[in-house]
Amino acid sequence: MEIAIIAHDGKKAEMVQFLNEHKAFFHQDHITLVSTGTTGNKVEAAGFKVKKLLSGPLGGDAQIAGRVAEELCEMVLFFRDPLAKHPHEPDVLMLMRLCDVHDVPLATNPATALLLINGLSYLK
Ligand SMILES: O=C(CO)COP(=O)(O)O
Image 1 (cartoon, helix red, strand yellow):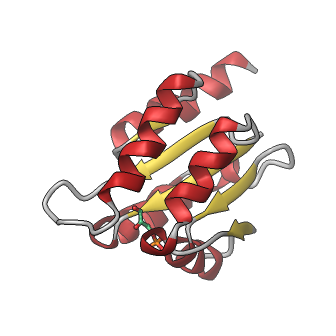
Image 2: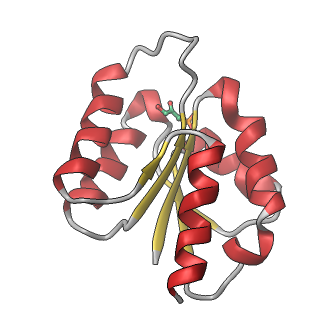
Image 3: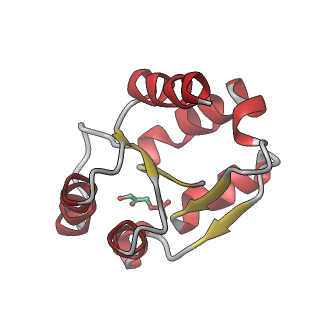
């Protein structure tokens, strides 16, 4: 199962903390992580294997949106910073819209992400 990991700059530390707190889940063989560029660098530095795409402002969100549309990516964890402005906001909206179009679970904060990964563990 491919899970996209994305975090705005103000939320990258929270994302790494979330991954570390749930290592047992994210290190499972059937879980593949894909990420926007800068988030991916942090995730990799924390010891996770991740496929890194472009940085968000350079098209990384759009690439992940494409993977959602092609049904390659089955879950998106996107910790957004609601207090900052982002030049690539249209790409962010496109990604969230395509999650809704394709009924792909999308968590935009750690509390929801926790419910999603617990839900998956429960379904297994
Ligand atoms: O901007 C982002 C999400 O919109 C994240 O991109 P980076 O991981 O490259 O910082």
